[in-house]
Image (cartoon, rainbow, N blue to C red; front, side, top):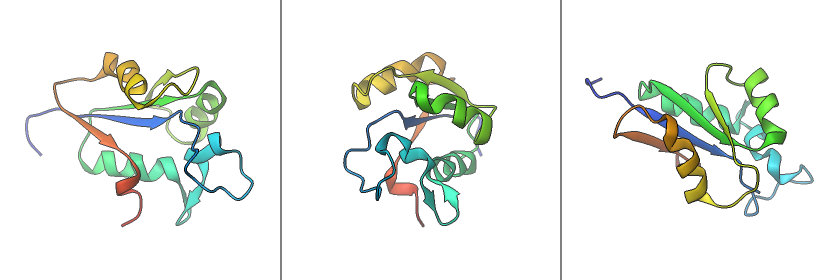
Length: 112
């Protein structure tokens, strides 16, 4: 790795309206299982492979306590009280970004 420090912004507050969840409430999308792991764990693993200094998770109030207890206690959590969009979630997270660089994880890196 280089001398650049990275932050990872992981967005986990949306409604999941484009995801078919087979009866599971869509706002629990980060906790859906893919290949034996929670969806959000795949994003965290990807970020950690890049050597991120800070993991910043933007989530809903419903999920914050679940995620902080069962997935990642060391991450920084911000609440997005209502699903007001991607850019609003990024704006919320930018308070904790540790440099000018960031890794934004999303659906494209979930399954190898």
